[in-house]
Image (cartoon, rainbow, N blue to C red):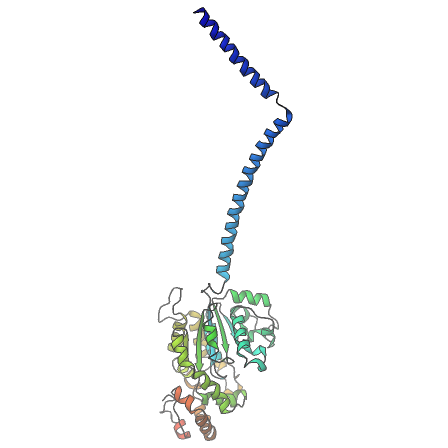
Length: 382
């Protein structure tokens, strides 16, 4: 028993000595070895921090990428279908396109471009590529000061509720105009300098949410207005030629773009303005993502405009000689066929002979004689 006790004591002493030696060696390690251990610890800490930093950087980069994608989506015309583009195309002037353009532009904060193609110059009006690119740029609010410099008053070209209050200004800030355009829910262009066949390229462009209104008028009324109100003195073939050319492409447009092409006769607007404008407005809102309006409801702005312009106040009811030929205030119930009571036999015969195919295609009555023309019981439509 005594030997066992001594053996245990000796064993404990040896173990304690070993532990003491090991601990002492660790306390008195060489400085370079201690530095190595410290460096390894720091490196491990730095690696850990670097990994955290990289993870954060990756996360924030992902956020930036998503934000950029969202910005592109909101700004890209290929994706943003909230903006609606409307092209009012008339083969020739004096066909009521200004009247229709003003009606559509009267609702909300819409932007209305009045003949933007004219600023490129007459020598380029027959260049399809130039004309179509000009229209695309205008729809995308990409235009230069030239578009405002073609008239003394920029409101004559760029029309918006804001510019309405500054109709007499000699300059319009280009950047401000672009901002107004980009914020507009509806961008309208009215032109008489584009062929219908050319517009197919616009309708097929995925960057445009385009609806095309093809406006036509009885060429007898158009030519009478040209001769007697604006003194353009056009020959019959120069007026009916473009109309015929555009009408030859009408069926193609109706088949290819049944929901985005609409033919409208000026006379139909004059006879039943409320009904016809409602039809036009319904056409513009087909397949829309917006909340659909009641089928029998027009926007307040359009209602106000029609009330003011179809029933102008007394001071606007001036004789034809003193009224501006570009005025859109009119008694539509009579103005559309005023030419019937004033046109001479010679002009009537020339127009009906040269434009016979146009008149028949659009279902207008051939009067042949002044007696028939001035007979109110004979409809202008065949």
